[in-house]
Length: 225
Image 1: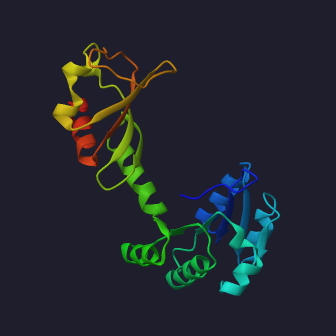
Image 2: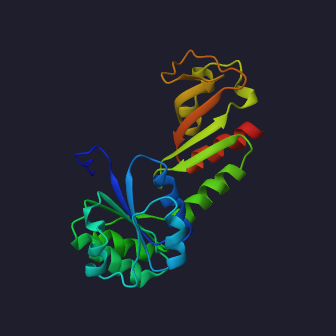
């Protein structure tokens, strides 16, 4: 886990201004943290300077060129050039050698991700993760959101099934029947984060659940019957 710098902010370095990198840079620019952005495309750098002046055109992502941008002083560096595997790997290696505390790298395949992890980066698969979330939301209208934390653990936000309204948590027993735990319940803006077995489900309850993707699919199938 990285530690905030003495001035209380986290400084982020972003390498690559594709769709993922640009969106990330714009979001981070709206926080109080500092960002340094690097890309070889002058037009993209010119556009992102509307959000931060620490944006640099770098034609080569070698160690010396990266160091000259000041990115080595960042707390976190995010490498957003996953579609260019060779460049991604070399850039990751260079940033690791600069001693940046936390490096996150976008990968385009499992093999690519394995290499990046071996170099010391935390790996993300933005396109795959978004596809999983969308697919899971499309499986049922009751699922409001879906976040995959690991291959076996997911967090889902869904509307209470009609057949569960008026029954207690113990009566429905999602843990026993589906292997799902209730993290919290929201109703009319109020959050219940300590859900007891005698809680009676109400209409318009929104459930925050954790469990495997298979368990969540079973629950939604049951809810739709």
